[in-house]
Image 1 (cartoon, rainbow, N blue to C red):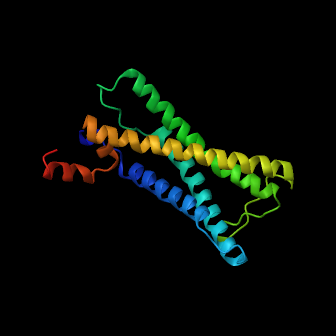
Image 2 (image 1 turned 30 degrees about the vertical axis):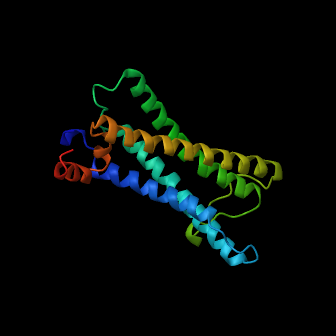
Image 3 (image 1 turned 45 degrees about the vertical axis):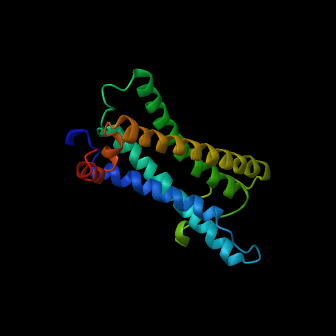
Length: 187
């Protein structure tokens, strides 16, 4: 890949910040806590919700930037169907990253909970208390979490496919440090 085909430093930073925040979101919610400890559970939820809010905001910024900026094209020899699949996959990932935190927020508020990112401020209430809505949105929140994990797994698999099988520089465009490693190892 040429330098012109490399993602910008800002795009790489936002991509990896998103990945890190998503890891925090899942780690926080899966972290076992003593159910008798209200404080530990409250901290777990605060970390989960706070990282979720940041994922949502960062996704909005990434979408705006993507709309006005330039993303490197896939290599010319990538078949048309794969190009379409890659675009649809990216769109689905962005949609899931926007929907997931919203379902969680609406579910929490419908359950009567106030969401306070980092304990600093309360997000304005969007919905009234509604048990049925809370239940439905928590279900959607869990379903989208599963879908998100599947799509992230496919995203990682595609990146590794490009790097190790196609050797076309697509992964390197998001991790330019690999170019130096590849040069040293003759790959």
